[in-house]
Length: 308
Image (cartoon, rainbow, N blue to C red; front, side, top):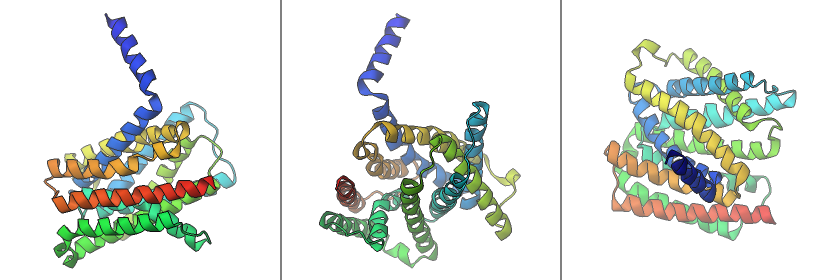
């Protein structure tokens, strides 16, 4: 009986495909990391949480590949890793974690999903023409964001809310720069090892900044709720989901592997409403749908440009 169950289970996995399962994992669990970050920063500084998360995640990767005797980066590869550590982790992840302290996890997720718009704009300032489809998508995204913020108009008079929005927007811009830099200067060695090194280096950068600014609290004062959040973010967010993400990129077309962009915000908003009681009105629901439609058109225009 046990053998039959194992055979049936393995058969289903082969039928569905591990890459598809990896996309499903990324789509759901990266959405949940917004809630884990929100819970963690309730009790400690956001940048300190990002520092500890990236330090522990980076150490896990590095120790694993040292034990496997994986070759270390050489020469110019280190410069690429340093740039990506700053863009993707110290700035993007660090600022988005800090930002969610002041805004809802769902709102942070939907703002972070618009990074393809910045890719279009960055390429435009580098001389690339913006396709009509991209312009249409950007306008639709803008309309969707406006609809979402109908329920937050009063919050715009709050300095903390404004600060959280700014931090999250800047984090999406740095993520877009990181993606473009990865495509141009991608290192030729193990991408998982590179990921661990980026996390570790970014944690050192953030530690220096937070210690110099005096914002960190003693580790002994970090409550169990935040440690649980950090553990979840390290194991689920920094290790398992990043592995699944890279695996899906390697085995699936971009248009399929990027589905997570549309699902993460929905997961974050729905779970945020259920767990934290965050606002989930009809205006927000409509705004999210409109924004994701616009985002789909922007992504589609990017893929068409690549084909040409």
